[in-house]
Amino acid sequence: MATASILRIQAVKAATGLSRSSIYALAKTGEFPSPIQLTQRCIGWRETDIALWLEERRRKGYAPRPRLSPESIIKGVKARLAHQASRKAAPPPEAA
Image (tube, rainbow, N blue to C red; front, side, top):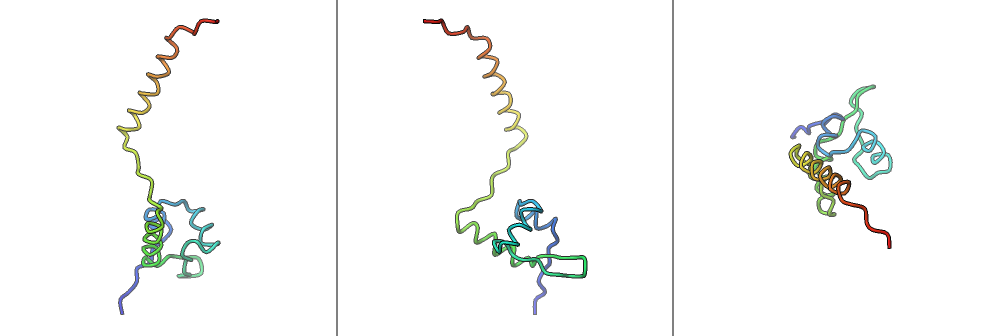
């Protein structure tokens, strides 16, 4: 019998991209795998349950949002600042 890996909350957050509160809220409504009790004060999730949940989300069309690189963030900020500066430099429209 193969031993199933147990994921703790930090690993589940990293695997899913969800916040701690979102994980618990979704689990409470049945939309996310329920944790299993490991000890009196320790819970975890079966790795297979999380993998199946992720695969189901992918099949339903929920794709993780791509993370932006620092370079693309800086490029966007510079473009926004240049746009704002050009609007300030342009003369106001003439009144009719």
